[in-house]
Length: 612
Ligand code: F6R
Image (cartoon, rainbow, N blue to C red; front, side, top):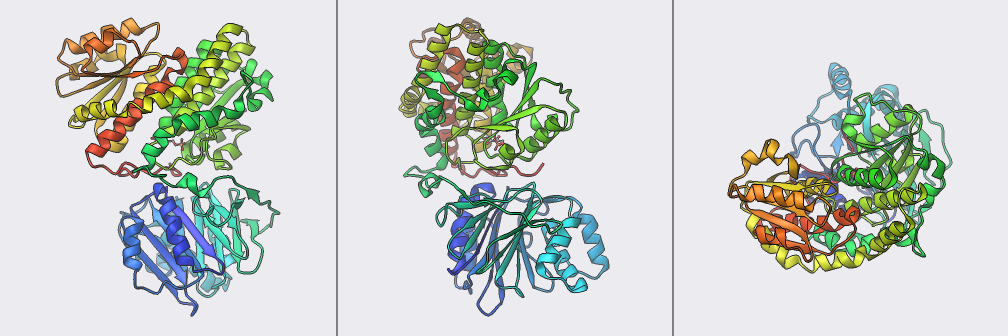
């Protein structure tokens, strides 16, 4: 949700900032901008509606000199995505330039005050209010930029990550964060700022994570100074991150989404690598609190979007295998609905990005009520793991395509490992069932790669769906969450309306929708309720509905009824969502390609939702 990048050092800032914006474009892509202070101390600001490439066109043949600068790619919150509302926003005296990710909730109040003082505004953004306020305080109270930023942030309510330039201080960037992410990259006599590490790792793998409510002052030739909003400095440590540039490239694939779907055999293996040791599930993050887990009264899983659907699959497994009651809840609902949390409850918060605002707030709510919070997260060092009591990382590397794919399968894998381990330790499942489930886990990467080889069959299915205005996805049991996730994948990247339903619910309403124009994707893999699903499919066929089915290899009944089928290898029922989702990811990918949609950057979406 908006990407920020900053540079101060000896090199030309512009190419670093532009490359950084391209890396962060997954966070928002409705406008972009850059501010540079040139060697003559002139502040040059270039902005453009649309993507970073449009900004490059605008900036071409302009003065792009300067070894200090800030840049932004926007996902609009306040004000439509046009040139005026793009960041950087500049104060009316032309001194202060600022880029911002987040929402200043009391911006109207601050703006009204400034208007009374005769300040003129150009944009509709909350960000301009911050730029104007900094400049106003500076002038009226004769403060340095650092002090003026601090004073302004003390008055600001809401969430932010900001970077500020002052052309009267051409050797300094001030940055701060609260509720939105910001990291500092430490090079040799140079510093980088980024909403995450992706714009930085090309230059340095040494990172400082800013904490909420902290400011950093980056001054050429000096060490970073980190302090809170009261001005108390804090010592900091520099961490070494392992992400590489290759992780951020498409690696020959036309889209990040396809790359991330196709690398699931490797990402599943990476997620399990250190956790399946000599045929045992080894989760030190669970083991260190094993009594808490074994005695858990209840588990509440909270997350948003795809991550919640992963949690729903986890619920089925933890209840079946470990006999612990599990509730799942949208984080956005959980945070406001006064949930009853009691001693002995464990809250599992799931997030790929580790920055989702609602999930962070749900964690706060859970902790205030005394629950232990364990997060399942992909981005190391992000806000959600840091706010949790403990974290299990999914370890699948950066996910850049806006539609989540490999993160989902890794989240489900972690949940399945937790369920199997707890079930075994509690004596709910036998030794032989445990061994067989561990074997099935180990076989997943190979089975995933067999599915990916069936891409042509899936492309064929995509042809049949690409003209439909609506699609229903149905599944039962463990694959009801798969139906929800399959439908979400289709709607978010191909803009076809799709709904996921538990198959047996069809006759309680949705079956009224069935016609030749409304294809149904049925997840009909092997399970104890397979025959029930066969009946549900027959009911759809009887109403001239077209059925596309995901079935287990060797399937007879559904394959004869369906218009098209894709087979997946057999596995344990609880692990079937991990395989069944892969053809559905590929299906939505190919439908979106056939419709000419922008797969990696679907309209109105951003990868990391750092605002409510
Ligand atoms: C869908 C998708 C979103 C995210 C949701 C939560 O493909 O990516 O639904 O799953 O915004 O994001 P995280 O997992 O980063 O908290």
